[in-house]
Image (cartoon, rainbow, N blue to C red; front, side, top):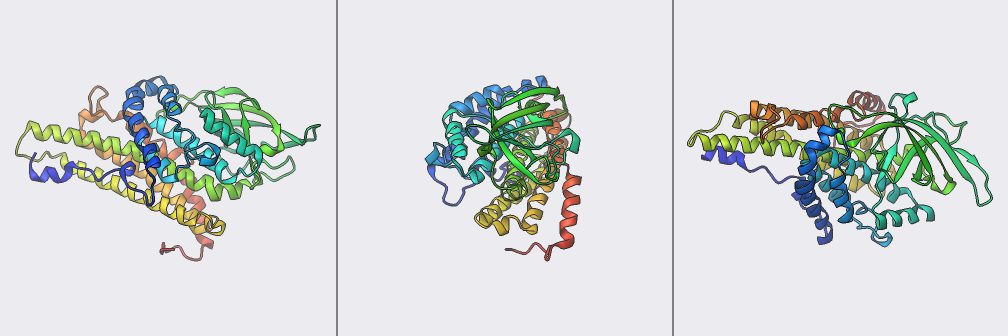
Length: 415
């Protein structure tokens, strides 16, 4: 390989390899174990998970065995006490092997973060202990068929009823999507606070498998992210009032759900992009070996893909840092400038992942376009196209444009 190509050959270390300030050895081990599972288990089964649209059971059996489902739960409750950085790096590592595995892991940890940050009573702490001990899988039900995917409004409502052992609740939700609903052990459900509340006055209700019943109403047969098994369900649940997280969903979303979602989704998309660039790099190397002394024409496309990949990584690391600085300050977490930053993170990375994969395909040419080569990128492209649709970018940008009208300073200054 000549000197010109050598400058392109080594990609700057990916998110999973970047050091976090104050990172403990045990936490680093979380990333190492996720990287091993992504490369050895998730990648091995990624093709048939995609082809058959099935849950990536092999990867999640191993994640359970490695105690990686409860890593964000505090140590005193039996978890690993891992940071958001560690979990983001784990999502990245898993998605390099199988995008659906990385995305399911991300969605699970988003729900864990909501419990950890806002579950302040004995019932929630007891559930976190059960999750850590039994490595339970958490899902969410935030969309409803009646609201057209608008997660900040609900038709479903909590109905309270007095009981001999304390107040209880019931709810029924026509959920247009519950990803991996059949495999979930716990589901966090959005609903109106009571039947008389407006649609935007929501709470988040935590229900376990013993509390709810699911009736499948639609099946997930999509272009990409097929292994997430995002079927539609009618969900009926009943439980005790203590299962409802006390903070309003609007505040909970601003402080935890929205930023953690966009950071972990983006980290997953970074994993897809990183694997695409890795395949493109391998292709360029093979071309250079075939014609010693020349720089393959496709090397320019590899440089383009690498630059966009580094841009993705930079904005994700900046968002994690911004979230860490804001944590502990409800005023910062609920500010319009913070919401704008987290919204634009999602839009930026969801567009970049597609651009990176497309540049990688153009690097590999027909070898990347075909499904029967080591450089095949068809699955990566299909998975990448889901990114802009998971909470539609147009919806997010419309919301941001409204925020900018009342925001005092949108200049992007350091805070």
